[in-house]
Image (cartoon, rainbow, N blue to C red):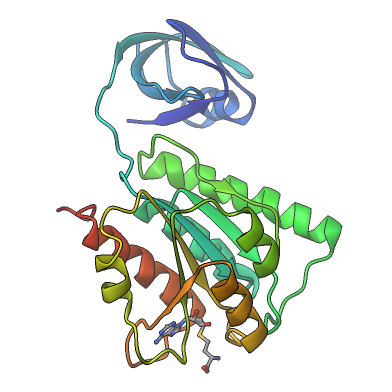
Amino acid sequence: MHRFFIPRPYAETMEIDGVDARHIYTVLKMKPGEKVQIVSDDGVTALAEIAETAPGRTVVRCLEVIAESHEPAVKITLAQGLVKGEKMDFIIQKAVELGVSRIVPLAMEHSVVRYDGVKAAKKCERWQKIAESAAKQSKRDIIPAVAEVTTITKLMESCECATKIIAYECEDKQGLKEALRANKEAESILVIIGPEGGISEAELNAARTGGAVPVSLGRRILRAETAGLTALAAILYEFDELGG
Ligand code: SAH
């Protein structure tokens, strides 16, 4: 069943507009009486019936609130060093499918790509759209936010996650599993992943100063896009969120 995020609080009758309304009318060609799922911006998921459709406006009548949540109990923020072109799109799409809560793109010393103000804003807009369609597709109850491009120092100043982890390719003492088992009750976890060129010593120190624990993801060096998704899957597994 198609799922639509409506940027308004829950009400019995709700209106879908913009791109989604055009999609319902023009592409899906849905008719009154057909069912959809809606998620309001105060987090209510409901089964709804289409009451009216027009090219830019769909009115739905909510039939029943769906209590079941699709969200992991542990809230994971993935801070990802900027990687080239479509790789970032891929990471965002897959991280949202897996259950990430928030994505923070990081401009890092060894990032091959650099985005200035305007380009960074455009990229964020694109990534947010990717997050939205992945959230719809994987039946998320939220659209994970893609933050503005920032630096590791700024991230460490503002991040409120209780547990912070940095996947560091040169770490040979502490593994991810150990770090997670020491934080079994964590409600929110930040995971920092470097770009293709890896994490610099200054960045590692900034992360450490901000309370992040360096962890290994095993004896093989993973590409940046593999590392983030592997870490996410492993955390979710450890917290019984992957079919547990
Ligand atoms: N160019 C670097 C590797 C960068 S891999 C080199 O050749 O050494 C990109 C990022 O993925 C790393 O910065 C790190 O955050 C993560 N990563 C990849 N493999 C890892 C591993 N085995 N342990 C921990 N982190 C890893």
